[in-house]
Image 1 (cartoon, rainbow, N blue to C red):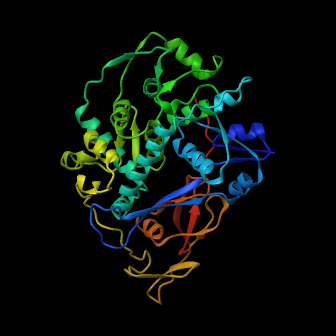
Image 2 (cartoon, rainbow, N blue to C red; image 1 turned 90 degrees about the vertical axis):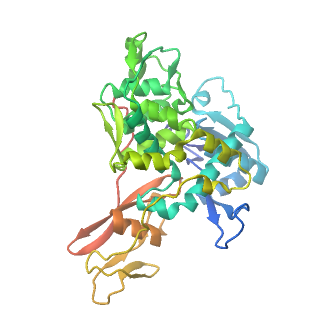
Length: 414
């Protein structure tokens, strides 16, 4: 029997049986050593945990495995290559658009490139772990989110005169399409939704590789660009921010990070000036201080590093660590059990259940996430398919609850 793996909900609707939807198979974690060791040594371990046990069971049970994935999803492709090696199974890998064609051709996977992209992702994960307590101050999950905020503010300060570019439907860059949609007064998170929607519906090939290649000339998106073909459009600070970030990060990580940042109110699209504004304003002095975080030369050295001693290449992020202050009585200490968080003051009535179900799987909220909820009123919790679910801390009738945000379905909205 054939077992299918995909990261496209539309593919799952087509195949229906014996198929699992996932954006990553493994949860890869960088676990720092608690021992103080020489800075030139590797002071961490990488661990992996399968997100959905049923995937492991079906890999072992089925003889033929077919994966239908977005070519830009290097993390899932790396997981598939890792499975081939671990389980001694041959996996047939197709892109979304090639699989629905009558004459299917397998995706040409550049194993060296995928490995390099994944290793760079792990290096950023290591840096995230080193700086996690600092990033938590901003309610960030990854170093990429901090880097993006810095890059956005750099471009806003130095880029005052945007040049024009010509629209060529046969040679259309993803950043050009972003500029077109920005000029139609669409915010960046909605633009990225449009890219995802049209890719999932097989209207375009993978836009997160940097180019827009149309597959469906009857789609709304194609007809829109066809009318504009040959005209000129002014570049925006947003596309320039993406180009700056693309010197150190894969485009797929940049766009999905920007979408996350705007969805969660860290940034807001300024539709008048066609730029992204960070909600927390950053001064010119701060930008200069943190400039090294978006310096291509430094990141080139980091990606080539074999010793993982590169944390000293960056200035320290100067913020306070998150502390607990009871929202009811003001106490600065709390206690916890496997099921609840509660105030250390025995007279205080703060009593918060800590069991949640992101992606339908019950898990206990960590102390760090609890502190984020206390300080920010919200946090993101990893779910079983590789994404995050947002949770809020709300107060009703003098009682506190942790509730999930309901995610909306991605629509075209052109």
